Image (tube, rainbow, N blue to C red; front, side):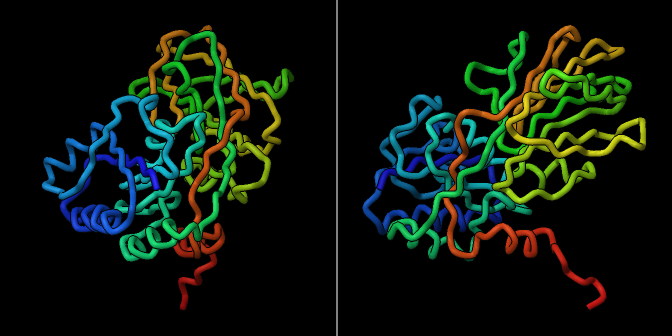
Length: 293
């Protein structure tokens, strides 16, 4: 099996689990390729591993059967940015905190790798969001997100005004700290913390969620993911922030239009036993837990 691996800097508590991943892989017939940045981190942490291949840019990733993300949800989103339209399956190991997308806990490392090697897993396809603009906000081919695209004020600026249009029809002018378009997958992330609803991950919806709106009667709106949503931004400071998952950039052009729609390709997440969405809701977000008991 061909496995590409990416990760980010980890704390000392995660070191034995990172080592366990490589020790388990060594017991199977695998061909491994590791991102160059993660290779340096592994060497500095004195992790013992065998890897004859590295990749520096996403285009250099070989035709992997699966891509390992070693870290947490943020690492998985960064790994997904490497994979992009190639739709390589991603298995997320969680050595961070919540781990909603990266579902393999340290206690499940051995079992999960065993199931993977024996083809006892499923591929969970998730819809992503795509953004276009007449301003080049992101690198070529990096204008997609699994969770959300968010438009927000910078740290030092006052609130911004975001004029939103749905399929070409005027929707609303949001006086707020910002506004996001979340996928169904992203409904458990930033959107949820801003008062957005929980949405089942395979429902065909986007969620338009305001961030700290000045008008208290403005509420999140659920629309079809076949919709085209466009924005124009007004800002007193003449700049604002655009972020797509873990990538962000400051925009200095308030004349730019941002158009958001469904991405043509999908994220493919490796799903193991027990990874059902409702189980994760209960275990990670304490969904339905009665605090009185």
